[in-house]
Amino acid sequence: MPPPAPRFAQPDDARFRARGDACPGALRLHRADDGALARVRVPGGVLSWEQADGLRELAERLGDGELYLTSRGNVQLRGLGAECGGELASRMYEMGLLPSERHERVRNVVASPLSGLDGLGARDVRPWLTALDALVCASEEAAGLSGRFLFALDDGRGDVDALGADVTLRARADGDVELRIGALDAVVRIPGNEAPRAALLAATAFLDAAAGSGAWRVADLTGGAGPLFDEVVRRLGAAGLPVAPGSVPVPDGAPPALGAVTGPGDTDALSAGLPLGRADAVRWRALTDLARDHGAGELRLTPWRGVVVPGVRRERVPGALDALEAVGLVTGDRSPWSGVGACIGRPGCAKSLANVRGDAASALRAGSPDRALPVHWSGCERRCGHPRGAWVDVVAAPDGGYRVSVVRDGGRREEPVRVADDPVALADAVAAARTPHT
Image (cartoon, one colour):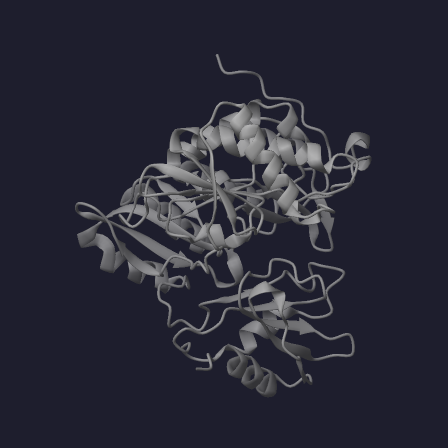
């Protein structure tokens, strides 16, 4: 007999009001201008097709009918009624998306989306993902992490290692793993079979270092990441693990290519982008139906707001790509939507100064230049969900119009160009900023 569903606290529960970390979850909803918002943690972005279809049903019945992907491969439901929290949580528990009530907001894990699918990584990180999630959910200490703390599991290709997670594991070809703290170049090499345990140890070391400081992430620590790295190396050694500190620069990283990804045997993976990270029921059904009928039965949500469907038989790939493109999904890097992101903007967010999603759609140009910089549209200075590395920053100005600038690695921002409320001029400025200069 399955265990009884837990009693879920409502968004206004007093124990939640007392906590400083207001990051939303599936049990504590955030009240936005367009209704309540639930953020469902999906470790590694891995959903069975049944779970994905269940989320669609919840979005249609309880929310605005759309699903929104985050920069951590999680899913948000928006436009929820204020009283739906209990039903929403119970359904997600039944679907296997809430294995631990106390840990649901701290299950923030990104993983290389193509790991084990294209032969390019040093190892398949799925066993690490399963083991780390189980360790986090079993740890009383880990329940004290903030909803913003992030783990990254990189299969060696450097994609999610570039995302600036608080604790990163990167596989090596020799079977070992490099553990990185924050954005330090310093890494410590340990045996690969100890990777999940080492990641949890690093997270609990962070909690000790952050005690009483209010730090939610490694970047918030007053002394920086260096002292924490030294303490993690010390604790790994004390735990009996052979450790070898070294230095490996943080890579640039890149999202999965869109379209067909050649895999082993007679199957491929299909990689599709969601325009502005959102999918209505028609688009989401196209993905879940493909996974169920022609794929391996799962979807992998990416930190770049895309979806990978593994295990599609090669002879079905052309027709499947056509079907995805027909419903408006992005299946090639030449799409005008490729690399375009935005916050929710008006009317969903009270802090936003503009309808950034509508303005982003109006500013699209046919095609996209080779090696175009990603662009992120923000309704205010918070720049929610912006990418890392080099990107074009388009932020709404308080007096109307936008400011357009290029952000380089390390956060160095070029002098912004002020663009009045003119769609043509804005499209020209964004296109010019995205074009790489050699």
